[in-house]
Image (tube, rainbow, N blue to C red; front, side, top):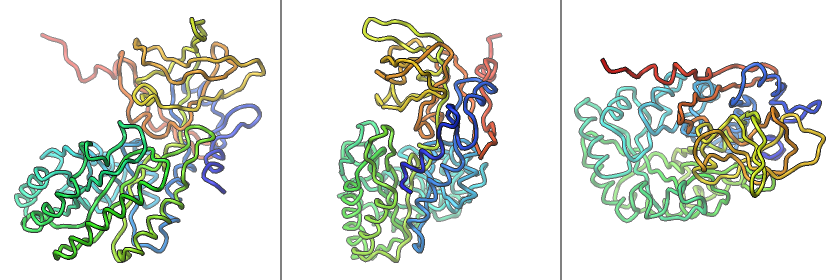
Length: 425
C-alpha cells in the first residue's frame, strides 16, 4: 500500500460524511465547536512506522522533530512507539520529558541555546547537543565542566546544498543562519577534542523542510561523509551520523513526493558504499510523521461577494493556521458533508484584521453558511505555530483512536488569554 493510499485511509467519506478513522467529523464538530484540530492515531503511528520499518536491522534512532506538533498526547504516542525526539528549546525538552520521553533518546538542535537550557539538558542526560557555532561549543563546555560532566556533542554542518524548497524553510545553504560551514568544521572539531567538558559523539546535517526530491539529501550525505573521512584521518572518531529530517508530504493530491523507504534506501546505500555502516544513524523527521495525520475543522460563517470572486469567511484564521500567510502554502480544503450543488470559486478567509488572513484561494466548492470544512495536511506546523493574535483563543485538539475521540487540548477561553497579566495598582 502506498503512503498516499494510507493517508487517505485515515480520512474517508462514509455515508456522505468525512470521517477520521471511525469518527464522524460533523458530529465531533457539533459537540466540540470549531476551529478544532483532529489527529488520527493510526496515521501518526503509521508515519513513524515507515521509518522504523525502513531502518530494521540497522543501529538507528528516529528522533521525531517535535516542532512539527508538540501536543503531549502526540509525543506520548510516539514515545510509547519507541521514538526519540529532536528538540529546539528548553520548553520542548520539558514537554518531551512530561510525555514520557527517555532523555538518552533526545537530541538538542537550534542555533540559540541559552545557558539555562544547556544546564537543564545536561542535568537530565540527553543523548547529544547538535552544536551550531564555536561560541555555543564554548558555552556548553563551560557549563558541562561546572556541572562535573562531559557533554556529548555533534557539529551541525552546513553543506551549502539547495533543497529546492521555500526560502523560509531552507536551512542548508551557506547564507542560512544554521550550522557550521564545512570548511570550518575540521578546525572546530579539533577544538572540541581539546575541551575537558566536551565528548565528541557525532556529526549532524539538516538542509531544510518540505523537501520533495531525494537528490539534495544524497548530495548533502556525500559532503558529510567527505568530512567524516577527513576527521578520521586526524584521529577524530565519530559514533553517529545524523542526517536530519525535512521530507515533504503531499499537500496537493497530485503532488509527487518520495516515499520514506525510497529516501532511506538511497541514504543507506550511501552509508554502506562509503564504509560507515558501523555508526549509529539518526534521523529527525517531523512533518512526514504527523502532517497527513491531521485536519483543521472550520465552519463557514458568511459568504460574501467580492470584486474578483466570492469569499467564504470561516471561523479559523491565520492565528490558527499560519502556513498560508507565512509561506503562501497550498492546503487542501474539502467539505465535511459535500453539497449536491454547483461549485463556485471561493477564497477561504478568516476573521483576523489582516489582508494576509487567508487559508486557501480559488477553490471550487459548493458552499453555504454553516458548512463545515476540513483543511487537510494540518497535522504539522498547524497548532504548533498558532498564536492569540486579535485575542483569539487557540483551537481545541482531538486525537482519534477508532471511534473514540480524545480531547488532548481544551479550547482556550477569553479568561485564559490574560490569566498571567496584571492590572496597574
